[in-house]
Length: 100
Image (tube, rainbow, N blue to C red):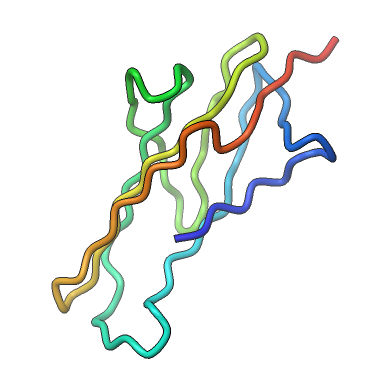
């Protein structure tokens, strides 16, 4: 699973705004799998102490960044019709920075 947020040169995104994070799920090279099923994503703004369900629209995660500096952590689960599954957690996937 790959997350590909559009970040600035300092690996940061703006705080206090709606932000979309593109993602993709691909099978392991040489692996045989079924058709992809739904992917679920959770977000944490406190280094994984608490998690909230994030909105997934196709291959985009839609987040509402809180106001103020901090970090975004992401946890995703996906599977396929052959019963293969993956869960991935990225603590401090990127930074959010208050602008102004």
